[in-house]
Image 1: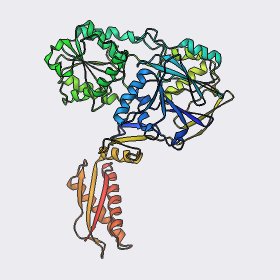
Image 2: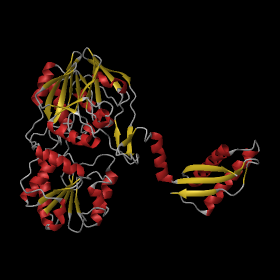
Image 3: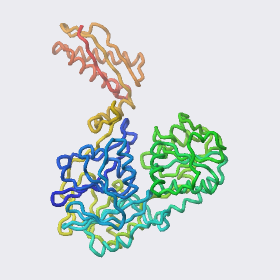
Image 4: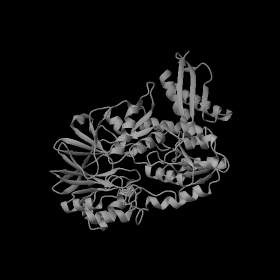
Length: 535
């Protein structure tokens, strides 16, 4: 999510989500931090969306909860995907559909939209003209010269803007460390055909639910090899229905069948397309690997993971691959076949764009710090002065004044967690989970929990009965109980030499003494809860 400000008005470009890592248990998604603009919601002229992937549109419903009438500008497919998402949140958005080649005003912002190629159709780059200068934001893009939809990245438009004078160029950094040019989507056709030609039984393909180009390739292969196709997973079924209705997905008549008919058909005549390519625990593929799905993987089945391995998801993905292999499936993935190409520009394409646009200032976007740094170094190699290449992170404020971009400050920008569902079908945002709560969850998962129960004679400060221990997820044996009990007795005697302790003080003694004991003896610190009852 990027916020532009000019003449007291705000323009938001993209509003997506992050997905939780293994170190963030219990979290559904992670939102941008709206706190810096929460007091200025009426100043927002529009939200402009570059394309329909979750990491660019997933946060929009949460922002619209705070102001429902913000206009949302985007291309046809992007707005269609967003509208379906809004229905789940029971929000009716104000949608403004645009397409490449058009210009549109949003308050003091003059917007121009340019076609860019990506792993999802209908992507747009955004040129933002104001009295302060011209900004060109690419969104996620690559320069596929043979795109499946014949929609090329508008390099002549980039060049025209370069002639006009781009004051700030914001470029996709995801593949900045990868030399050369990104392969075209067509390059994976032989590998997909090989899977269809050699698979003896069923084929199960797992992909992102928004990767229309990849699913088009699978549908084309199914038609060539006389197989029927069934979609599984709510988001997959929904998105492919939208894409087909709008003409972005071309499906031969009679090719799609209902998944309920899957088991009645011959094994060598069917293809299942489902979600779960990133090892998501509740997705269809993970449940198949765990034998928790109606589709039972068996000997001779072929599973095609037609996607990348997102950093941080590797363990989950390999866990699914191992599970599928255990049941006899042949798993084809990026590691053993050319079944994926990236949707992002590699270093050669980025350099080409820098030489074409010749911007005054560059601010790499979209990627981790190492990707931003690599992208910035490419810009410097094309002749852009190093001091005019800004490597920034979330929350940094950049001013563009008289053609010079510089870092001028920072706003509050924390991770905002969406933490599970509430009873009425809503979600808890922000307050439901904090960094401290996540630390407790990790501690619970690693070291377990121990509850200590004691009964205290308040007149004497002495326990009337031996302390009881209740452990969950922590190995508790006689030696541990004896050692923990001794640590409490020693600490209590020392405290009573000073004064007679009361209940709250004794709870603190329980917690601190047992924590020290377990850390010293076992190198583990369970979450300890102490309860003291007055006799």
